[in-house]
Amino acid sequence: MKRACKNILVVNAGSSSIKYQLIDMITELPLSSGIVERIGLKEGTLIHKTFIEGVENKIVETFPIPNHTVGLERVAELLTDKKIGVIADPSEIKAVGHRVVHGGEAFTKTVEINNDIKAKVKELFPLAPLHNPANLTGIEVAEKVFPNAVQIAVFDTAFHQTIPDVAYRYAIPAELYENMGIRKYGFHGTSHKFVSQKAIEYLGKSDTKIITIHIGNGASMAAVKNGVCVDTSMGLGPLNGLIMGTRSGDIDPSIIFYLVEQKGYSIEEVSTLLNKKSGMVGLTGDTDMRDIESRVIKGDAIAELSYKMYAYRIKQYIGNYAAAMNGLDAIVFTAGIGENDSIIRNLVCENMNYFGLELNGEKNKIRTSKIREINNEGAKTKILVIPTNEELEIARQSFELIK
Ligand code: AMP
Image 1 (cartoon, protein in one colour):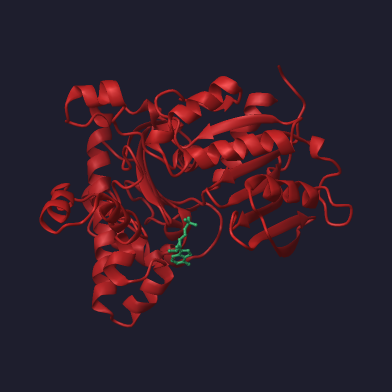
Image 2 (spheres, helix red, strand yellow; image 1 turned 180 degrees about the vertical axis):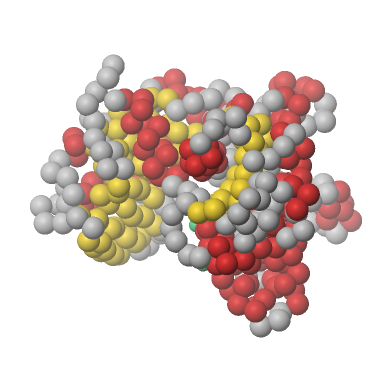
């Protein structure tokens, strides 16, 4: 059934947090955004921003938030507040678009949520034990708080469901795929989709071979051929691939056996080690690239090595995906590091002329929040910086479904 709708609320629920954004789909601009944090702890916090006629207002509240329902109910009150509200009534939100991390093989596109969909999201808990339970809580709470809104699920894995079996299967016994669903799924799909589509528009042709490099706190790359994802660097879970803030990315699995069998580590300890204590924090003690960058500038050797390792892994995946697509029209840098860190972009593109990459030093330094091309004039392969907007992509997909 088609319903008239203008405002979409985007909800990204974590185990102790809810990020949200209310987007006016006529202008595609946010009316409000915020985050509820420390849910379940003694004191929770709510940071709520509104954007009215270009003016930003921010309020911060601290109060006990025992569960997600209390948090989202307060968000609804603030959104409709007589003085600072951006809408008059919750019914002005006709759809809530939920970020759901794992859609397994069941979900290849965005769907309207019903009891069957919720049951399937639940079936996928074992594949995403840290994310899908929180995402389902977000859905159930939003159903209560916004009963008139259509609830929609947008899956992080959906864009990667076009990856062919030759790329998504692991060379382990076939029954592990057939009976347990062990395969590459990939994540950050909304971001890879959003920026690859922007790149296609920018290039002005649809037959394109693009590599998207999403490097933020989490990091992944995707090979996108003619608008369709053909490979990505994360796998069954988000640990594989690039070096990240706290995750190791690709390692030899023997390291795990060595730690468990020879050094007495428990599986929990290895999991914490690889997910939370590795990557840039494991190498340098810092997670934020800005802190590591200032150490590089001061000549700190381990900070410099970690930067080179970070870039080297990205270079390897560029080679990998250029081979997978048999060519390359553009690479796209996006997310916190990709959009802001000119040193990483430079290290990635250095000595890559074989792939047609020629970074322009001056253009690389320019700071703007717009799409920009930072390669030399006439270079074979474009190097683009494209700001990602996962919330807008979720809102667009939700809007498409109900308009
Ligand atoms: P995201 O997950 O996309 O929000 O990215 C967050 C990460 O981006 C931070 O942890 C930083 O490492 C990185 N970042 C943000 N701003 C900058 C900057 N100006 N220079 C370098 N890295 C940055």
